Image (cartoon, rainbow, N blue to C red; front, side, top):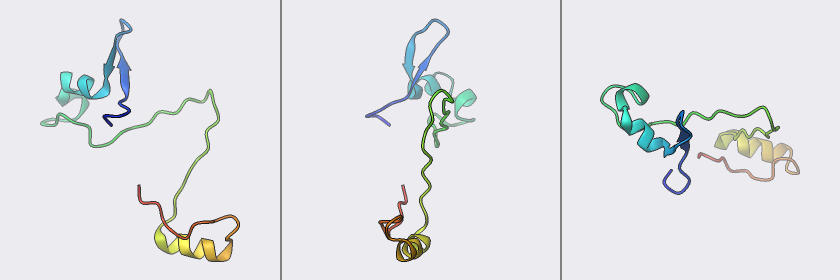
Amino acid sequence: HPSGMSRVLDEDGVSTSLLDYVRQDPDKHAGEGEDNLTFLFKVLSIGQVLSIQAHPDKHLAVRLHADRPTLYKDPNHKPE
């Protein structure tokens, strides 16, 4: 994402944007005939505990909110 681009460090410690890194050898990094990533693979560090977020679809969100509104405060889904 242009406003928060991921960075790659090479073996010399030089930082390059992930997009520029992919475009240096697009067949290797993005697939033959591509020059952009169609997904972002996230690697999480085990050095710090992270919360997990799971968003229900609209039907389940409505049901969960109706059944337990103090826990599920929003009847809407989050289709990010």
